[in-house]
Length: 307
Image (cartoon, helix red, strand yellow):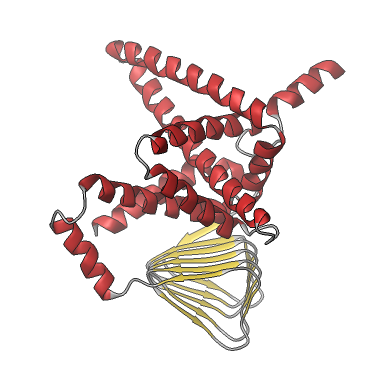
């Protein structure tokens, strides 16, 4: 029960914090969802119910628990957390299919044009995790780190599902304008830190409390989006280095997360790398305005010259 509450909180924080980036799309959020043969939906999100897709979903189908049955077409991603995912023989998924902690059945004739990721959680693994939490078999900090990696994994998958275009555009700017992005990140962090300190002092007269809370939320949103952009950048760069071509957003963010997680596990060096990545993350988010423009400041400058 506690895990469901935590996942729901994380998801809604992510959704309502970054929803303006995808305001041109609509979401269907229900327990039980049925898309008829002649029906078209943009995105589907379900919690613990049954999702039956006989028509078309333009973008993504995301389910927490319950069942997902696809006999129609999904434009981008089918993602199940602890769900029973079934792709009928007539199913067409133009993107990726991911099943985490549930089941995945693909009937003969079903088409998946992207990647298929299936991570099962057998009972013996669950028992091992419970044992680790009950006894001092591994250091407490390692457990916290593993939990952090898992949460980042969930956030990265959701980001890759709902904001692939923004992530791709922002990632491309790291390669094109690395030093401007890095400089923007340093300046942004300095300004943000000063605002936090100023709002803390204002909190003594109450007026600073809502300002401080707002700044914290903004900082978390920037960190989440920026870090996932870095996951995508590193994963995509790795695929290009090995001649695999352009990776799908899902595969890229997963590879990037693995790379960053391994590096940050290293004492001292991991902390330095994490701080360096934070600078880049802030810089690319501010400079691209959450991946909706190549250079936010450049456009303003160009407009001023025309005037």
